[in-house]
Every structure is written in C-alpha cells, then in structure tokens.
Length: 597
Image 1 (cartoon, rainbow, N blue to C red):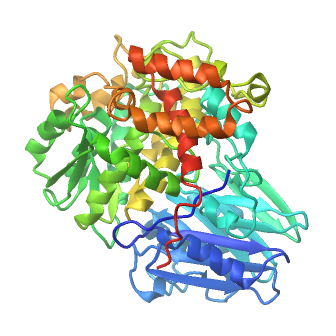
Image 2: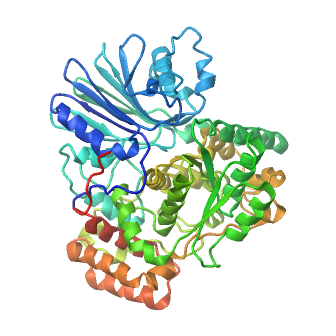
Image 3: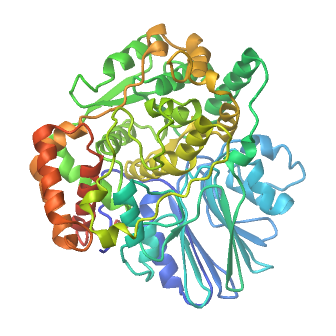
C-alpha cells in the first residue's frame, strides 16, 4: 500500500509544519522536500537551518497567529545563536512566563521565543511550565544534541523514523517521512489491531512500517546516533490514587475558575477566533464560557453543521443557546452526494484511517469558518472523558477494553471476518490499571488510549485542510487532573452522567440544555452507508477485498456481513467504516499531486 500525495484545497492553507534530519544519511534537498510536502500546514513563511557540522538540519512552514511580523520567522535562534528551534502549536501562558524572564533579551512577541528562554533556564523540564499544545525540536549547536517534545495529550503531532546508521528523521506528518525514502509499506500489526479491536493512535505504532509517533507527554533526545525516548507527563501519576476530599462547593469554584481561564487564554491571537458548537452540554458550556469571559460579546462567530435528519441534528438546541447570546451563526448542511469526493480529499490529508462521517462534517465546518475570516476555532473536546459522559461508564462490569460505542450495545468490530493468520497479528491493549476504582481507570483509558488520541489526530488533520487552527480549551491538563480526583458520585448520580459539570454550568446555560441527556450520534452514517451511499461504500469495500481477500479478510464473511448490514439496518456502522477506510486508502494512492505554495 502506498501513501497518497496531497491535492490542494480551496484557499491558502495555514498550520505549522516542522521537520528535522539528523545523522549523516541526508542532504539539503531532502530537508527542502520535507518542507514542501508539509507546506499546506503553513504557507505564510518557511525556513531552513543547516548545522555547520552537517549532522543536523531543521525546516519549518509557518502559521502566523501570534506576532504576524517577520520577527516570528523559524527556525528561530536564541540571542547567543547556540540554540535553534522549530515549533508547532501554541504556548497559551507565554505572557505569564515572559514576566519570569525579566533579564532575558526578547527580540519577538512570539510564544516560540518563550520556549527557547525556558529551555535555557530549566532544560528538559521546561515542558512542565507550559500550558498549551505543542510539538517542537531544539538543536543545541554547542553540544550537538537534539531535544524534542510533544504536549501532554498529543494535540499536536510528531512522527519519527530511524535508520541503521543511527540517523533520525522527524516531521509533523507521515507523508514528509515517506518523501525522504521511508518505505511506504502497511504495518500489518497495526491494521490487524485496528480491524480486530478498533484500536489506533494508542501507542507509538502507526499504520506504516518504520514510522513511529512520539507519544503524548513524551520527549526525545538524539545525540551521536543514539535516540532516547522518555515520558515526561503521565495523567494517572499526576492525579494519584486518592479522591479529592474537599467540600463540593470548593471544588466547583476551583474548576469553574480553571474553565474560565482556559477559555480566556485560548483567545490570545492576532487573528480572528470563532467557536464550533453543537447542541450538546460540552460545546454549549464552551459557548457560555466564551460569552462570559470574552471582551467582545456578540462578535465571536459560531459554526455548526447539520445533516437534514431530525433524528440527529442538534440545530434546535444550538439556536436555543444562540438566541440568548446573539453570536453570529453559520450553519452547514452535509449532504450524502458530496461524501465520495470529500472522503477522498480528507483521506489524502489524514495519512491513516479517520473517523467517518462526523470527521467529514467537520471538514466542511472548518472550511466554512475559514471562508468567513475565522483562522482559529475553539472546540469542546474532552468533557465526556473528564466527567464520565458516555453511557457505557455505567456498565463497567464489561471487561472489553477495545472501542466501545456510545449509544449501542453491539461490538464495534468484526474480527470473525479476518483470516486466522491475520487475526493472530492483532495486539490486544495491555491496559494499565492505575486507579483502585474501575470508573477512573476507564476514564484514563479513554483519555490516553481509546478516545482522545484518535479524535485529536482526526481533528488536527481536518482543520489543517481548511486553513484553521483548532484549539481545545477543555484539553487543559489541569481540568483533567481535578476532574479525575473526584469520586464516582460527583460524576454519575441518580442515573445522570456529568453530574458535577451540570451543576457548574447551571448559571451559563438554559435549564433544558443542562438537563438534556447525551445524544450519541451526530450524523446518519449508518443510514447513509446502507442507503444513498450504498454503491460507493460497496465499491470501497470491493477495493479492499481485491487487495486483501485471503490475506487479511475472509471474503465470503465480509460480503455476508455487508449484505446483512444493508438489509437489516444494523445500528453499528463502525466495522463497515473500517472496511471503507481501507478501500479509501487504496483508492487515493497515486491520485493526488503535491500542493506547492
């Protein structure tokens, strides 16, 4: 299987792309090629640094969000020229940190320079001081040493590959590594694990042989051909085994204060910021917090999508929220006829399987935001994991640690459709048990292994397509740590999930929004795949079978399962989308041209 190149989409693209080559088995042309392949992540500016020793090179494609002047050019050096950095992301507390460096000679107003200052003072532990989303590489010219790090939950991506001679290649996207000679071969263990258990983005393995993800909360050090990976943040370790014994009102007050600060910090931008809103409690709470904390009430644009199906659409709830806050509202209706072409475009940017029709709907939403002048968009990811919002949290007697689906009791995957030899290549999740209670352990698994990691990857790529930087205020690690210290009865009480969160948001939202049950599905994926998209889905599945029948799949079982799905209206479409995803990956090979800005 080969990775597809990228077809350009409407409008100039922005988001940061970083890359680095280390060792002796590379040249400047390769570094430039990596920058070109990732140019869609940041066409505002680009730059390259080459160490005089010839063993290190850095490349950067710039997104201009803070300090839009040329002073923000990267790679960026410290004042002495002894450190060089390429950085993707945002350090939201950069102004607060800047006050701690009164004697430091700052030459820009960027958060990038704060990382350099912090690294000079605190070394590798500088990451503990950052609030934000980040992936960066720092080359120490004097010590000939690389230090790189990824944020606590992995909001920003970073991939690497090694060579037999001790060389190292690092980039924001997998395609950049393939562009400099890493073979484009499918990782069968990853595919088997995904198709059998629904697991992906839960480890350093990717869907491609020889390409690894630097895991969330991890750092890397490379020197003299030796690579060392270390964990610098672990949510369970920070939370600890004990519950928060403080009075409820005191905890509510602290959490509310952190919520407000998290949203306020994420409005730090020199370009326009908007909000992605659905009718659910989480995004509604975000909208309420924006209204409460923002200095421009009524000016923050709100974006939502619909599908024209009243069973799933949340527009009435959105309109109820917006009516009292008077934010400018923009609505996009996703239609089945646009799915085949849109899915091919999204797949080309994802590099790996993505999350179905909801991801496609978000692609249109981000595109709509960009076309209306919004460069940064806030989203409500993270509350379900913090406050036990999924219905299966109440069914913790179930031992399955693979994907569980909100709103259905069926198994997510169809391992019985895989060949026995291929199934044996699947690796079940060896899940840690960091807490004495099952609820917090399940929350931890969803946060670090099964839910959050893949959602963040989908969202990073799909927002990148539309030239929009996505910020996740509820992914602030302080919120997670405080929420996971709370006992069971503050999360699920009287059959109500997110009990404490609902209590906190009472003053922000209409009462019927606060008390509304979680609505599990946002798009009619299962109906469309068996209905108006049936021929397209069948074609994708046929492509997958043409390549892998007998090797990965028992063809007759797949065909029978697909026919049964179409006839019976199965409430679970997850396994169907897995097969469609594989077909999409194969269909997009060789059909995209690289976008060169």
